Image 1 (cartoon, rainbow, N blue to C red):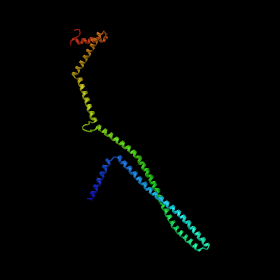
Image 2 (image 1 turned 60 degrees about the vertical axis):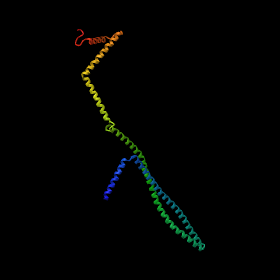
Image 3 (image 1 turned 90 degrees about the vertical axis):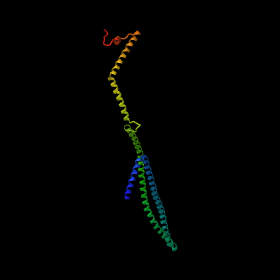
Image 4 (image 1 turned 180 degrees about the horizontal axis):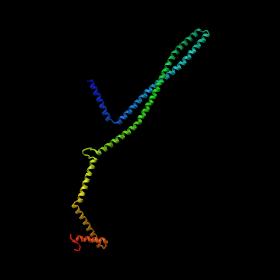
Length: 266
């Protein structure tokens, strides 16, 4: 039972994660990743600063101990010299005091020298740690700068992807049904072509029918009558018509007054 619950929990977690990743805005996720990288770099710098500060503190302590060691060494030498001079002058009491002081200085020298050696070892370790911390900060800084530069590139690619997706959607709408109240481009084109073909076919049928021929004859008769009328107007105005035009007008006038089936001479 527990095993099944674990499987179900992992399945639900993976499903929720996938759903979130599908619906999440990549631009927002990119900004989150950049902010996270900047926070990590800031924390790394703080840790490196602490390491470097520790190295500096160790260096200062060692410097003070070295100064103290040098001073103590000088005091020990001075005590030995003064004890030697007191012994030569026969002042055994002072010689004993100076000798005791020299021994105290020597004891402190031994302890201080051991402390300085420990500080030297600690300073070496802290220096190595500080150098390593500086190197890590520099590497992480370069990585962060690379990510910041790449962010602009990714944002540009994201904008291009969104634009391309919109264009693809628009092109799909030209060939696919987008709704009951909006016809597609192909549907409108087919409708126009069908209407044009129907009108073209009707015109061809009209031209080939008896009514079409009769309409053609009537149109020719109207043109002939118009030509004769124009010749008559020109004659009234004293404008001579060209011989060909006059002959044609006369022939057409006779043709219009001659009964059907007879000639002009009959």
